[in-house]
Length: 493
Ligand SMILES: *[C@@H]1O[C@H](CO)[C@@H](O)[C@H](O)[C@H]1NC(C)=O
Ligand SMILES: *[C@@H]1O[C@H](CO)[C@@H](O)[C@H](O)[C@H]1NC(C)=O
Ligand SMILES: *[C@@H]1O[C@H](CO)[C@@H](O)[C@H](O)[C@H]1NC(C)=O
Image (cartoon, rainbow, N blue to C red; front, side):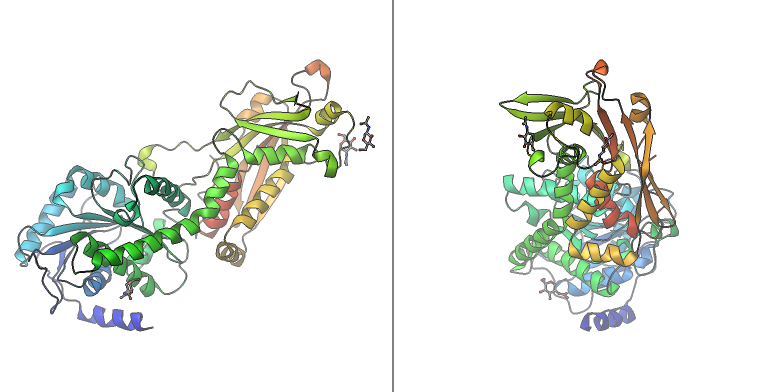
């Protein structure tokens, strides 16, 4: 491919300024100056544990594609244990000094590009000093929950690989979803805050070599040529910078077309994820529990039309499910809990699963329903295990064809184990759905709690409680966890 040839030429031509600690890459010869005569500087902040020199190719390719003169500084933060709001300004000051020694014009337009886990602290910095910067470029990272894309005081470009195992697509899906809403309020937002999900790319797309071991094992094997993905990311970065500086002519129009298209692409990619999130819970209802309760009733064919289900998601755990007749229609009313992971804001790196840990579904067993309907037959007796298998199959069939093929190629199975039957509601409540990976196979074990169909127990008769696998959690296994190099991190704990 011509792009690979192009990269080889660039690597051979890299000339760097080595007087300081950071690496200053001078503008390429022959590039035109900006009309305003202002210089542009792109400062690259490396991923945790990655050497700054690993970004030399990325910087050079951006310089090559960007039509005007551009300086690049690769920030060396190896000496610092962590990057903080205290040391980042000092490091940036050093970098500016080195750029200035190397001959950059004073008062340049500065863009920060940051890779991975240092994205959030860099976003904090950028948010605090928006006037000193022109834009923020997030590579394999995203704006943390404490900020909103629509109110962030600087233009932000977000580029993440679609199969980045460090920053999950399920976390990005939430961002794209909120962008869809914000873009309706504020048309054009997706041009100022573009979002790109690079197809087939992973977390190490932006660096030359490998990530440090602990990130490498979390990541997913990339598909396709790395240089193609790097060039694409560089091109989008150059298009973003040109559109903000409105130079050369036509840059703004190009960016509009390109970033509208990347947004549409991102919307398509995340669509299955969003639809399964909404299946688990939408407003205060769970469509998934509704389907599970329907199956659990064991009614078939015409008889199943005798029963409607209303499935509320509530935090109040004292309400037992019940049966009521309204306008001649029989309703099962269930009250379930969708148990979200507890994750505080500073852990919001997208490393951990995003889908709920379980659905604590409080349903009614088939006997109680049959007794209420008087004239029905139970065609099937289902278990919680069956319902969880159905959840997985629903997720599998909702996945995009590409994602499904990818999952199939990894040959990583799921086994649905027989239910663990508990004899107390409190024990059922406190025992989580078990998700264990053993030798690349996911074992799903539900916890169930049932009461006898005995009127004396009313209203606690004929209960059938299941710890359910949320369909979006099953999809997350198919899209992310099953594909990671190491799968040690997925248990519920
Ligand atoms: C950059 O992207 C634009 C728009 O998609 C495309 O026309 C152009 O060929 C790309 N350039 C490179 C070097 O990939
Ligand atoms: C009971 O159901 C059967 C078949 O579903 C039907 O033929 C019969 O009429 C029903 N009886 C009553 C009392 O509803
Ligand atoms: C379902 O279970 C009940 C007892 O709990 C039994 O009477 C009935 O025959 C079972 N139905 C089927 C289809 O297995």
